[in-house]
Amino acid sequence: MSGPLTGIRIIEMAGIGPGPFAGMLLADMGADVIRIDRASGAATPSDITARGKRSLALDLKKPEAVELVLTLLESADAVFEGFRPGVMEKLGLGPEVCLARNPKLVYGRMTGWGQDGPLAQAAGHDINYIAVTGALAAIGRKQGGPVPPLNLVGDYGGGSLYLVMGMLAALLEAKSSGKGQVVDAAITDGVINMMTPTNAYIAGGTWSLEREDNWLDGGSHFYDTYECADGKYISIGSIEPQFYALLAEKLELDLGEGGYTHLFEKDQWPVLKQRIAERVRTKTRQEWCGIMEGSDVCFAPVLDMNEAVVYPHNQARGNYTEIEGVTQSVPAPRFSRTPSQIKSGPCAPGADADEILAEAGLSRESIESYRQSGALRHD
Image (tube, rainbow, N blue to C red):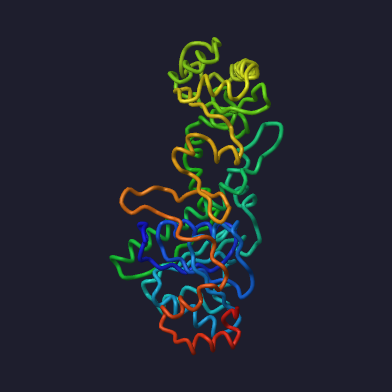
C-alpha cells in the first residue's frame, strides 16, 4: 500500500456529487475508505468516484444496520456525509451519538447551504449555491448573461476540496488532542472563501461588477479566448508587460507601448481585442500552437475533454490512465515519498461486507444473521 493517508480509515455515507469525489480523493491518497451504500444499486466502470473504496450495503431504516455503522466507527478515524441537516440525526447517526462511541472521530458534514441559516433545509444544486456568492454573476459574456462553469466551482471547489481540507486538518489536530470534532463544509461558505482575492479587487476599486469588464473575466484583450481559422479556439493570458510585448511580436501586431499603463486603459480594450481577433482568425489553432506554444506569451490551445487526454504535455505527465476500459485522471497532487495510487476500480455496493465486518470482529454467523434480518444486503 502507498499514499500519505495509509493507515487512516474513513467511513463514507454514500451520496451524490461532491461527497463521492471527496471520498475518491481520500482513497487515492491511501485512506481505507469504506462506503456505506444503500441496500440496492450496482457499480459500473464509469462510476469513477467509487474507485479505490470498499463497500458495505445496509438498510439504515433497520436498527441493526445503524448499530453496524456505529461498530465500524469505533475503529475509524473519520466519517463524512452529504445529507440535508438533520438526516443523520434521524437515522441515529448524528455527531453526538457517533462521538460518544469514538471521541477521537472526525465527523465531516457537507451541504450546499450549511447546517443552519434560513436556507439550510432548502434543496439546491451547484448553480444555486454559486449564485448567492457573487461568483456566478461574474462569469459569462456581457450580453449573454451568467454562464454556469459546469459544477466545478461549487460542488467540487467549494464543496469537496474544502471538506477534504477541513477533515485532514481535524485529523491532524486529533492526533495531538485525542479529541474529534465536527467539520461543517458548506458549499456556499467554500465559494465565498474562494472569492476572497476577487473581493479584494472590489475593495481596492480595481474590479467592476459588470461582466466582461475586467482583466480576468474576458473583458480585456490580453486575457481571453480567440477563434481561429478552423473554428477552434486558443487562450491568451499575457498580463505582464514582457509577456504582452511577446504576444505583440508573435501576432506581428503593434499593440501599443507603455506596459501596464497601456494594458489597463479600458477604453482601448475593445479596439485591441478586435485587432487580435482578426489576426487570430487568419491561422488555424495548430498553426498558432506552432508559433506560440511553449513561449512566455502565456498561451494554450482550448481543448475539448477528449483532446486533453492525448495532449502531449498531459501525456508526458501521465495525467490519465485507463481502468476497466474507462479513461480517468490519475491521483493529484503528487508525493515524492508516499505516492498516491488508484487501488482498484469502482467498488460494487456491498461487495466487501464479509471482509469489512470480519475486520470489525464479527463472526461468520453474526454476519449471516444480519443478512437474514435484511439489515445487510444479501447478494
